[in-house]
Length: 575
Ligand code: FES
Image 1: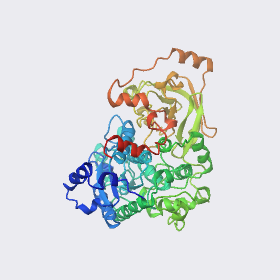
Image 2: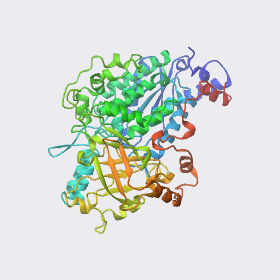
Image 3: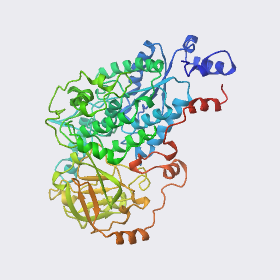
Image 4: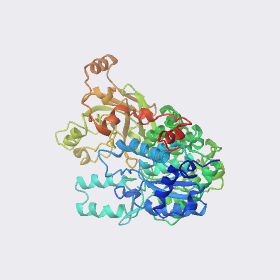
């Protein structure tokens, strides 16, 4: 097989001179250009993305492996997305990063690529880009932070912040204690160490077969994360020689395995959107009904916050993803091929659970069903999701009057007002928080409990929006209502006092208003002014899809033509 990079480097010509000579300025000897597989190390390192800030070190370990196996490593940056710092939301830029990843892989003289990820959106963005570029690729997640510790408590990223904030804003925790917890929670490199979106997506990358076994959850501070990075670098060279590509690994079977694993580990609701988007890049459609069916069939086994008690470090010591998958292997497509060149069934055959409370056996699950329920009804004709394992069982069937917030600003200005007409039975409704309405579908879905109810001891209530929610969050929170309100979904016409019915066992989300009245209100409805009229924001608004389709851009969906990569090269006139 002729290496793709030979098109840049072989022979004696004007262009091969240019390609080699300018790279030689980095001190590379001539023999590197004589047929070694060129392995790009696609690095989402950034000091603005704290979760990925250690990935330069990981890249060095990957390079060792590439050199060892006879390859030529070249590290390159892409944009990076920090869940905490980037406004209005990192999700606004996931597709932009995916475009960056795809174009840098396909436009450069690479034969294969190692993807270094961590923080929430960086994993799906890299998988989307790599799936579209479809060169041999292997992923190395940077790993979760060490478990948080404050006094005698183990504390989890995000999940415990929300709890502590409620204690602080109601005077049950001092501001000094609250600030002290900041450094006790985030005490090493790595991403959030609960089963938030980062841990969910890196774990699912492993389930999908895009990482070496056990790679996803090694704590970032554990030396074994460097070991597996080096092994991944070695393996990247072999992937090129075997011409094993993402399109052969990311199959429908692999995605069904990922959905099942997600349900059994109490994975983030964000995974629904990201898996649909990654699959969409390969022309594979995943329906919300498929997620719900698999969830109903799959018990929750992983006892990690926010659905459980432990943290990601505990999950790794308990056997990690291979042990979990081996426990549910009878319901997996075990012949799905992975980056090892072997099937997922072969990869996990010897995996054992070392702590039966962290990874429960199927005979003793935490919950008989999986983490996510898909709801439908006249309020969400295209669907909505709820993380049922992180919700309050008593609220799974609930009807109550709506308290409607027009947008985030309205919410923040009124939620703690003593005059807010709200009781524990109310249903808090936020609109204009979806892909176009917010914009970018931020993680605003876990609406705060009104202060006056918190002071009465209310800890949870039904909340509803077209937003997403942090994977670290919890509560009876209905998310991703589709179509979103800014697109004229029925959420747009809910009024204060309308009765909203939530019935999770029957998967129903219903507005107790007649069809005729809904039609009248929708006819009177006017769409909000768009947030952007130019720049990237306009591109986003013009092309983003709704949540059930993954919020990808319409022009990025589907498999690229088989001939597209060489065509792109030829268009440059460098042949
Ligand atoms: Fe990066 Fe949570 S902020 S994973």
